[in-house]
Length: 62
Image (cartoon, rainbow, N blue to C red; front, side, top):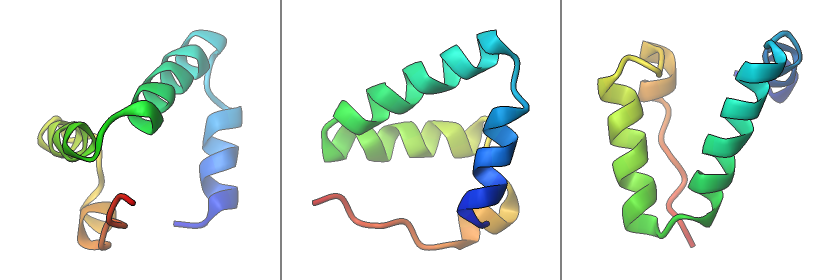
Protein backbone atom coordinates (compact mmCIF):
# COMPACT_ATOMS: atom_id res chain seq x y z
CA UNK A 1 0.00 0.00 0.00
CA UNK A 2 1.45 3.36 -0.94
CA UNK A 3 1.76 6.29 1.39
CA UNK A 4 -0.42 8.43 -0.88
CA UNK A 5 -3.25 5.88 -0.59
CA UNK A 6 -2.98 6.00 3.21
CA UNK A 7 -2.94 9.80 3.23
CA UNK A 8 -5.95 9.98 0.93
CA UNK A 9 -7.84 7.59 3.20
CA UNK A 10 -6.95 9.76 6.19
CA UNK A 11 -8.13 12.89 4.39
CA UNK A 12 -11.50 11.26 3.74
CA UNK A 13 -12.13 10.46 7.41
CA UNK A 14 -14.58 12.51 9.43
CA UNK A 15 -13.11 14.89 12.00
CA UNK A 16 -14.01 12.47 14.81
CA UNK A 17 -12.40 9.53 13.01
CA UNK A 18 -9.25 11.58 12.28
CA UNK A 19 -9.01 12.42 15.98
CA UNK A 20 -9.44 8.76 16.95
CA UNK A 21 -6.84 7.69 14.38
CA UNK A 22 -4.29 10.25 15.56
CA UNK A 23 -4.86 9.28 19.19
CA UNK A 24 -4.20 5.62 18.42
CA UNK A 25 -1.20 6.51 16.24
CA UNK A 26 0.33 8.59 19.04
CA UNK A 27 -0.22 5.75 21.52
CA UNK A 28 1.45 3.33 19.10
CA UNK A 29 4.43 5.62 18.47
CA UNK A 30 5.05 6.09 22.20
CA UNK A 31 4.55 2.41 23.06
CA UNK A 32 7.34 0.01 23.96
CA UNK A 33 8.25 -2.69 21.41
CA UNK A 34 6.24 -5.24 23.42
CA UNK A 35 3.20 -2.94 23.56
CA UNK A 36 3.49 -2.32 19.80
CA UNK A 37 3.46 -6.03 19.04
CA UNK A 38 0.43 -6.42 21.28
CA UNK A 39 -1.41 -3.56 19.54
CA UNK A 40 -0.62 -5.01 16.10
CA UNK A 41 -1.90 -8.43 17.17
CA UNK A 42 -5.10 -6.88 18.57
CA UNK A 43 -5.71 -4.91 15.36
CA UNK A 44 -5.19 -8.03 13.24
CA UNK A 45 -7.55 -10.09 15.42
CA UNK A 46 -10.17 -7.34 15.22
CA UNK A 47 -10.03 -7.52 11.44
CA UNK A 48 -8.47 -4.08 11.17
CA UNK A 49 -5.80 -5.25 8.77
CA UNK A 50 -6.46 -6.59 5.29
CA UNK A 51 -4.98 -9.91 4.22
CA UNK A 52 -2.44 -8.03 2.12
CA UNK A 53 -1.33 -5.89 5.05
CA UNK A 54 -0.92 -8.95 7.27
CA UNK A 55 1.18 -10.62 4.58
CA UNK A 56 3.68 -7.76 4.52
CA UNK A 57 6.55 -8.11 6.99
CA UNK A 58 6.43 -5.61 9.82
CA UNK A 59 9.51 -3.59 10.61
CA UNK A 60 11.20 -4.61 13.82
CA UNK A 61 11.12 -1.85 16.44
CA UNK A 62 14.46 -0.18 17.18
